[in-house]
Length: 94
Image (tube, rainbow, N blue to C red):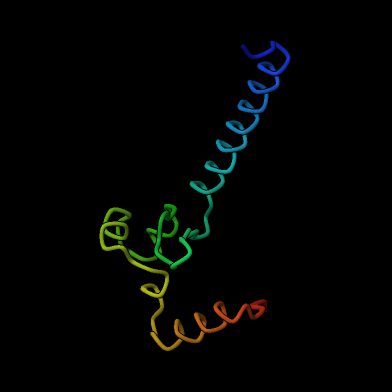
């Protein structure tokens, strides 16, 4: 049996996490900037409305085709250069 104090703390933390999740989901969905989330292999796992508008490709198509971030580069060479920097842990700032 779980103590009432522990149970209350758990409920409070779940509520905070849920609130935080809703907040960041709203920011993601309503951002005027394209936001693309990718897994460790750079495969797109989520894209917001601005990203869909920018690419002109539906979210379903992006996910069904298992597209990676490089799919959005006009020049494949640019993607290769960027990928090399990421893999070498090189700083990619301005």
